[in-house]
Image (cartoon, rainbow over all chains, first blue to last red; front, side):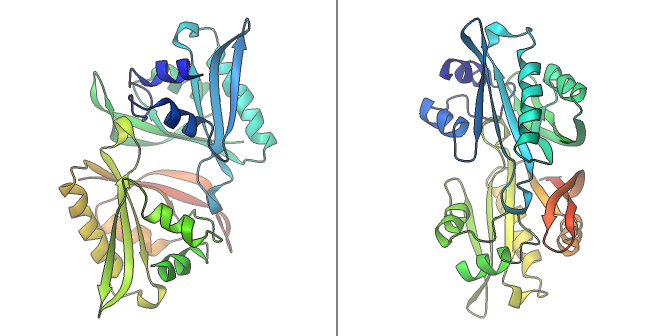
Length: 147
Length: 147
């Protein structure tokens, strides 16, 4: 798991997680209270992981939030999509009414396209909200879908 | 401080904070790591408080987030506005490039109008994202301004 988390956050081009995050802090985030954590296996290897949690507390807790990570060496095999479809079903099963992504980096076009295919809409653009390591300040999207 | 926090969260019509939040949990949120916390005084009494923090970590940490609470018995005296103006200056002083509110409840019209007067734009509407105690599922806004 740490291998995947570390491999995904170090390039710093997709997540607003500190690239230098420690193993302990990463695990606290990925396995925190109120977080459901899942893994994807291929040929007996863990190749992906995702979390499902309430996006906000109290009177916003009916909206879920999810985060997905695929081992970079296993990309392009539909693992992200399979996890996302599983995640939407899990969110429905757990009684959530919607799913929200708070900060989808606009330059992460593969992710944006996948979420759109899976029924998410860009409901807002956060101007310059992500400091891309190569491209500077780029927009990020808030994406949302009902369940 | 607890008197104000408690008075604001109990009605449950403005914040996605559990109305039953304990004093310890409320203080952990309001005085957490990376959080700057301020108070407003009137005639020697604490009548309001606000927090200023990075909205996200890592490569999103240049966008700030703020939360404001005014003692219900001191509303209508411009305390929210005074705190908000102070907050925008503090955010600039601390080097933030923008400020984002993630979940402004659409029925909290006084807050929405105040943020718009202070230069915030509604950059997205989260459909039904807030479960209002009287009005059911109502929209919430993502609001944003550059600094």
